[in-house]
Image 1 (cartoon, rainbow, N blue to C red):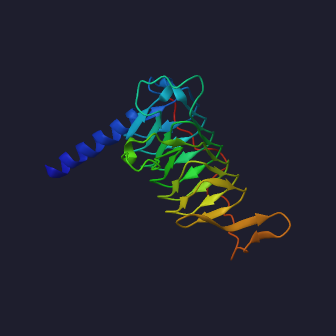
Image 2 (cartoon, rainbow, N blue to C red):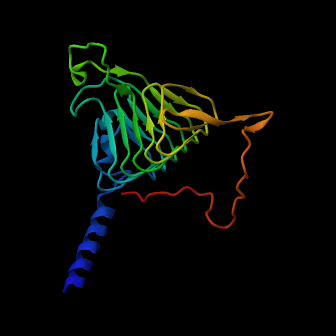
Length: 227
């Protein structure tokens, strides 16, 4: 009996998850400013609001327990332009938080591990007489360049501008600033530990360049079924 009950629970949960994913063409997807074909947000999400100010491109996969928000609270009029843009072919790991107040932009083919935190707003503490949480926060736009990879549990602070094909090591905290294309950033606080020079190659050199395996995964994008 217990095995049958366990099977029923697992089967029902699997069915519910498949049906409840937010896929292109669904009623939930139509709440977004734009929601590209082949895109999916896995069920269950954590917190999603401000959809009219969130744009998500095509063939983007977003994991479960995700937080995607625009603005402080639901129901605000945030103006004429999107605050959060996620490009085509991105993958955002489960349990991640992307919290936009002024501008967060992902290029195309950005991948993140699970539990990444990205925000364009930070608390201030200049007024020593007022609790920090009651002081008006500071905004600074964030840009994640196309082709970048952000490791698990990394934090991207307001004012970070990553170039193309950057790598952020797991659990790093990336401070505000401009990071050139092909930067490898690691640590707390994050710093550039490897960079690419067109004339000299990788500095410092890679220990061993990986050898691509053929016949394992095709070049086609992973596509979520339409709703």
